[in-house]
Image 1 (cartoon, one colour):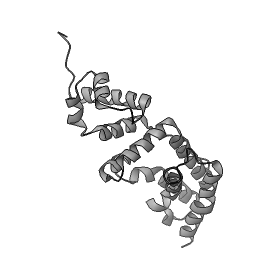
Image 2: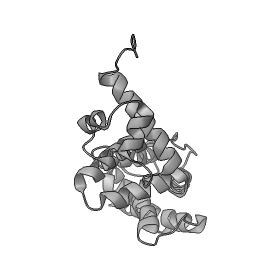
Image 3: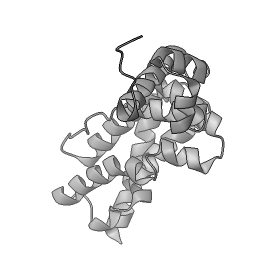
Length: 195
């Protein structure tokens, strides 16, 4: 059309991501195609491939736009906080958006470059909310500073992820979440606090 400004740079990238988000939300990763995204964004596939090397990379970028962090629970005690954060993760992984995440993880296989993109370039992003909970527990005197370690912090959510990935459950029952917190997470925190 005459007089229409051609989008470039950030404006075009935003339009492509918005289109990819809409496609991902409607069709999941299985239905996400570069053709559909390009058509929806009003551009050509070359514009997509200049920014994302393949459908998986675009799917991951779109997923990250969709997945917004929920506020951290603050119940006043570590057990309540850990249990609520685990319940949030369970609800997320059980949701349609969690289904998209599971599709992306399956598509990424063992490709570490894509897995790192899903985890915000490192495990630090996944550990941050758990380290915050542990930091509050240390400040309240419930735990010693020795618990502030990313592997300790994330053990509960890793065990929950195991329920989805290894066991293939569509949602973990609440008694499993309570067991993870009471039988593994809190004893680990107490043990490190006692050392």
